Length: 326
Image 1 (cartoon, rainbow, N blue to C red):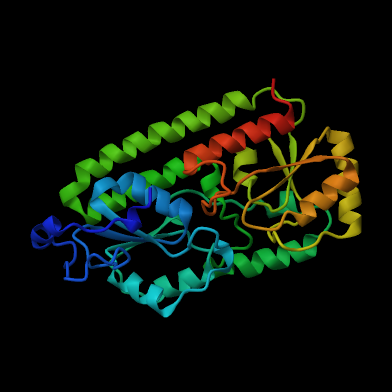
Image 2: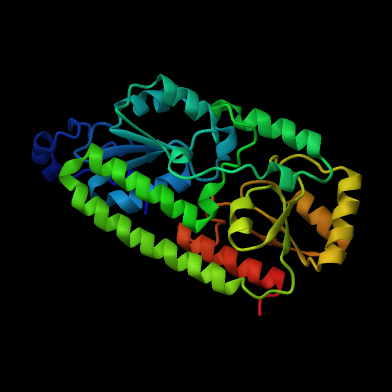
């Protein structure tokens, strides 16, 4: 699925001028050369944006991602080359407030089409729900630091983990592609409709699969699943709030142990891109199991699936097992 790795064939050279989507130079076989292809060049900030660009753009786009597989997107720092490439693109697709370095580079870039996914759906503040137990001060401080770019306090950026909201973003991305590259508008529309069906199917699977469970509470390492929990009537308890690397206090650990007993929690979830140490410590102390719940910030060899839908299906199975789905 790595559109960005695709090499441009010699035959495509003749089409470059007619399409008017960037010049194709002799060195265009360099697959990372943004702006040097005969396609609609899209720079995506991280995996969920890359997936949308690829699914909607299909054969008409050349997608480059700023966040490589295995990189933690929140901490991304851009190289001078990446910043320069952004300026050569036809469009940039990002989620404002998730990656401050990206927000800053885009604000200074003269790329013609800037698509902010945060404006295509409604972001919410899940902070009060997730941090009303121990570690509140640290979590709020981190949230403010992480989400202050747009001026809002602690708006949760993990909106792609709700298939319904992700579909709303996809619709807006498709409209932007159609406007920016009208020659292929019909294909973008068709691809967007196919993606909407996939996401609708995923939503139905989650709704049906989590309708009847022994418990509605799940523990996570990092507060990434607020939208998903809200959509399907679940309660997320995050060990570390918005900071996946911080250590919870002994009081917080004790509180979670008591809650696990009270709510029938069986499993502590951790994720693939950060350490599982805290989750495993809590699980050992509380006599709980551990499993992966993937926030889909990037696809790696460790991911349980090779694209968004496959990993979300894996997440559903993990939740069903942990919550005692009927």
